[in-house]
Length: 407
Ligand SMILES: Cc1ncc(COP(=O)(O)O)c(C=O)c1O
Image (tube, rainbow, N blue to C red; front, side):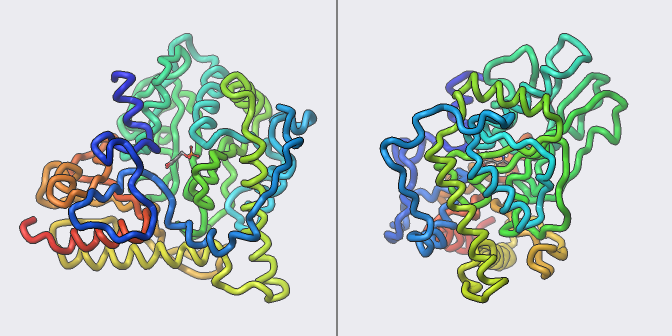
């Protein structure tokens, strides 16, 4: 794949055919009917309305003399991680109950994108099996960033080897398990280990394992888990991700990768992320213990409420149209909310029943830009729709979908 094509494929970049490369507006101004609706990106602006309400509480002030040093905590494996951030994310995981953090090493990164590459470096450079690059696989449909991130620098340590369901080589591999999955929202476990008798390593990408998207059914406790502020609270622009790692040597190698790549992570971003997480935790604490927070001030309930409503509206339109299918999800009991609910994924994996190429069809027919199933190692009859887009874009998309007559 050419470099230019790889760069165009990166998740946060607007497609070149849209608005001269500028992101589509995220203001509330009404959409002219002829405009392109861009639902390709994974932006999380749906969550902006919550953070607008909490604007005062989340404000951080940073003085000119602060944060001059690269270092934060020289006693920690990840010495550029601020103790405030470590404490805040441990508190958040303890509140939600979605991941084990005690006696684990935490590595902060510039988004989980950087941590994914750090994990590939750490796991593949620790693999003793052969001098050949280790195979990296994920079950299709898989997050479209993985193949390009794995192969961008044509490393001699690792190479993209496609769909984990098809993997039958007698060679070492790394399998990425994304649950809930981007793009289709499915809840997943590893698939390769059940078939091959060779050494396999796992990266669990749990970006969407938060009660805004899915019931929290267990405390995840895998060897290497990735999380990101982008999907947890919606602050993609702060570029904060973290890895929870059992093995100290892997955590050290991941730290080395980040040091050589960016000498750490912005302390301004770390400070802001810690503040955002504290605000989430404080509101639950106040609600549960002294009743001084209202339910509408609880981040996960508020956000899930909006996402649930969007899913209900989409299902209604899909039911009426007869031309499309969206996946159904099981209801499960959530240990965090003590309620049962369905998964409400960040993306809708839309299938066009009678079109060979759903992405092109949506673009030509509706001027809606969605990411084609092909980009996820899957069937082009599918396209991925961002459910976390602005209210205007989402409503306009539904309007256009419900007006299609000839599919
Ligand atoms: C499954 C998954 N992992 C990782 C990422 C990248 O996240 P970040 O913004 O932390 O780099 C995304 C972004 O869409 C994602 O969907």
